[in-house]
Structures are given as C-alpha cells and as structure tokens.
Image 1 (cartoon, rainbow, N blue to C red):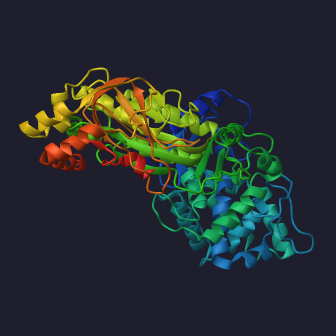
Image 2: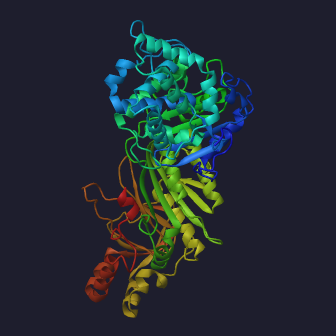
Image 3: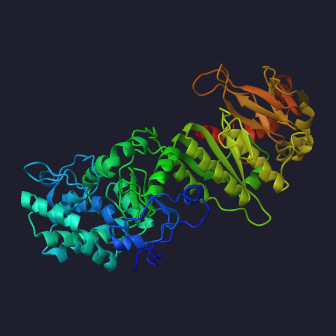
Length: 613
C-alpha cells in the first residue's frame, strides 16, 4: 500500500447528503484553494505527495461516520501515532512509571527540539520527538520486531481495521533521520534511554510509517472520546483512565509550540503529524481526522488547523463549553396509531386514524440541543419512512421542551426538515413559545397538541373522512343518534333544542345546560387560571356533558368555542322530563355516552396526547 492513493480497505462512510456531510463538504470547498504551506521535504518520500490532497472525517460514539474530500487517501501517521503509542506504554507500565521516564509538561519548542530535563535526560513530554522515541522504547516486547508488532496491533485496534506500513517512507526516514538519532544518543548518554539506539529508532520510524486515512484517524479519535472503546467494533482498546491521561497530554502538548494558542482557539485535545495528518477529540462526543500535506512553520497542516478552528467555532466544541444536557434529547417517539391528540372525533374519523395513523410520526424533543444532541435527532428523523408514491406522511415535532437550540444544531435540524420535505413528509412544529426554531417547517402551531390535531385533520381529509367545521352535520347523522334505536332517536331528537355559539364564546357555562351534541364548529377545553392549559378539543359528531372538576380539586375547565358553530342542546328541564317519561331512553343514552368505542364524549374520553404530557 502506497501513501497518497485511496485504500480499498477503508470503511465506507455515510453516502447520503445529510447535514453533517454537507457541512464537511462546505468546509472542504472553502479551504481547498488555500495553497499556503510547504511539504515536509526533510523526509524525501513525503516531498513527493500531492499537496492538493485534503480530507476531513468525523466519527461519532454510535459508530456513525461522515467524510468529505480525500478522507479515504492513506498517509503515514508520523507524529499522529504518538498519543496511541503513549497509551500502550501507560497500559504496560502505569502512569507513575511512565511519568518517571517521560514528563507531561509542554516544551514550548518545536517537535524536534532538544528538550531534555537537566541531569536525568527525561524528555519534557511524549508528544515531541525525544519523548516519543523514549515512549516507544517503553513498550514491552521480546525484541524490536515484537515491540513494533504490538504497536501496530494497538493502532489497528484504535482504527478498527489492520494498518500496514509504508516501506519506502520507513526506508526514507532511516536514511535521513540523523536528528532523531542524535536525540536518542543524547538520552542514551543521560541514562533515560535504556535500550540500543538503533533498536529504538527502528521501531519509532516504523510506527511513524504506518498508513491510515483521515477516516481511520477519526475512528481512532472517537475511540479516545468514547473512553477507550472503539465505537465501530465495540472492542475495549484501552481503559477509560488511560484514554483520559492520553487526552490530557494531547490537550497540553499535542501541537508543540502552538499548543497554548491551539487550546485557546480550538479547545480540543489534538495531535498533528508532518505528513499532514491531524487527530482531534471532542470528549464524549466524537473524533475528527484531517489530512492535508502542506505544513506551516511549526510543522502543522495548514488546512487541517484552519478546518479545526472553523469546526470548533461552528459546532461549539471548545472543552470549556458547557453543553448543559442531562436528559435524553428525544423524550418521546411514536406515531398517531398509539398516541392520539386530545381532539374528540366521530367514529368514522376514529376508524380512519386507527387504520392509517402510522402515517403520522411524532417526536418530542427536550433539553439543551448542541451538535451531539442534534446528531442523535438526525438519526431518529432519518428513520421516518418516506411517503409512498401518490401518498403523504406527516411528522409532528414537539419542540417546546427545548431549552436552548445552539446555532449549529438549528442549522442541522432545519436542513433535516428540508430533506424530509423531499421525501414527501410534511413537518409540523408544536411550540408554545412560538420561537420559529425551524423556519422550513410547513407550519408552527401553539402546542404539540394542536400540531397533532392539524396532522390528523390532514390525514382524514386525504382519506375523505374529515368533516369540515363549517359544514353542519345533520342531527340524525350525529354519532349519538346514529347509535340509538328508532324510538330513542326520535325521543332524543325531540328533546334537544338548537344551540349556536360564536368564536371565543363560553359554552355549557350554565348549570341549566347538560348535554351538547356538536354539529359544526370546534370547541376546546381549558384549565382555569392565569396559566390556562388547553386540555383538548371537540368537533362535529362528538358530544359534551357538563364538565366535572379536575381530579386535583381545581375549578372545572372552561369550554370555549375555537370556531363558530351549532349543536343540539339538552337542558336540565328536558333531562328531568326524560327521567319521568322515557327512563329507558335516558339510561341507554348515558350508557352510550360512557362508551368511548361508540361515541366521542367529553369528559368521558380522555385525550391521550394531553394526558401523556
């Protein structure tokens, strides 16, 4: 395998134009024309690579991966290997023993500087060349070949696939690596390096010549972000404490004499390499792999550093940033088959919703939504099936539980809303705060309850079962009368009187009013008080009895007309007459109203969506 050509072994990334891939593609396009920097000519093989190559990759803790540009092009890891070999030394010897041989303080000097502790010859940290050479010598193994094989196996476990070595780059480094040999001889003379110099240098150059892609490096980084567990293979590569120690050293020392400014501007543990690679870790969120050969004066990839700064700013990745999320970001997921709105409906409409409610999906979101939370939501939304040809689907997004939506998360979710539209999915947002969080949603309504009602109406209309509020239902066709026998139907029709209500009018507010059969318009029930909450609504074909006090003893709900309409009203005088003259009819009526399978009657039928919240 040669550096600079795509590797067939590279695991394919996500191919869909999802918002994360789109963001990486946009970033790649914005930086690809930057031709500043120079190739690492002191290693002849590295001076032959294409300076235009530029790849970005991101791997999440769920094993999902995204990429842009030349993310499948292999390159030699060079110094990007250092954190992972340091992890192996920690696993072999423990932190205290390794610290006694290699420090953990930033040197403030170049990667190949002579930075040794006076007297002991201890290198300042394992990320500079001197410290990396000594760290490599600490890895256990029966000879240099066995030591290198253990290193190769561990880095392969981090990447989730076997990594090969570029023999030509290795030979090139052996031929030109005199400065690294000089560092090794100085440490050998000081007593800090306790093995043969040529043996230490041979293994070190071999680890630097291991080939990986930006996609591999992203998985390696995600393994550290995941506490040492590879998110793709699920294998435990190192312990969580070792992962933490490695990240700490990367944060303070990984970028050489740029480490302080890097931590200030980007705020992520990272490590660069002179082949143009860069690994960065967002602990607990994801890993980043970057590759672009031209280097700045400090030996860091120009494009990779620039891309990291943009990613950190856009995705708010700085270690000091507090995400504030503790509860699951998706509080509820389902469909209108099992979760119904609080709208009471006539039987025909209920039958259609029962048969086709699966065409309405529901997602309730909550908490502080940043990049990682938004990515979880994206995966949930991607599972929503596309509309069948000639049909339609609906998605209710309950966002009123979102305490904060970070800008990057807002862009990701709004892009997902646009993508859902291309699949024939109508997105309806419910938000009592009316914040307009997702501008490309089809409509935003004052509550998730009303959003679900809206979608149910749209589904019913598509199946020809929706009775428009303005279209008056004949009294004989009301579900209550239709369910009675001829005698009872005639008696009740004669007992009720016409009733008209206007928009925002209180309905059934008098003790004299006992039962209302709704024929047109729409009513809604609200709790009383300064913070009135909408409990549910009723439309044509449903009934309302005198509202009872709430279970907690608060005042009985208010019944308000949301749309003007008409109905048939049974007053207390008519009720008393039915008790005297037609007790069998009255008993049948009460049994019927108590049966939610037969008719929709408030408050007998409780609203599923409203009661869940």
